[in-house]
Amino acid sequence: MAERIHPYYYLGGLVGLVVGYIVAKIYEIWVIVDLEREIHHGPIPMFFEISTTKPALFTLM
Image 1 (tube, rainbow, N blue to C red):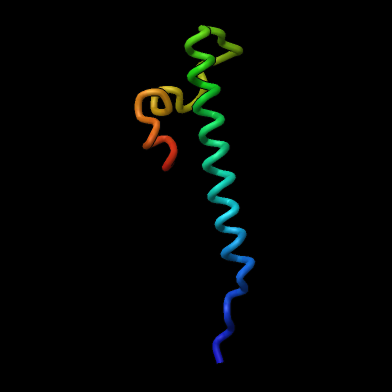
Image 2 (image 1 turned 45 degrees about the horizontal axis):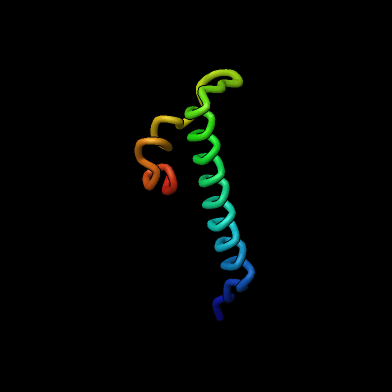
């Protein structure tokens, strides 16, 4: 008899997707605010061009 996959694996995947989406949105907001204020704390943030010009693509990356 084949072993069933434990439901916690699905729950972990769902939580990972939600947390990843939230982190992507926070990063996107940070980049937009940083570029609008023209305050740079170092090099230009990674993925800044994609996150500001194509936010839907950035969310799915």
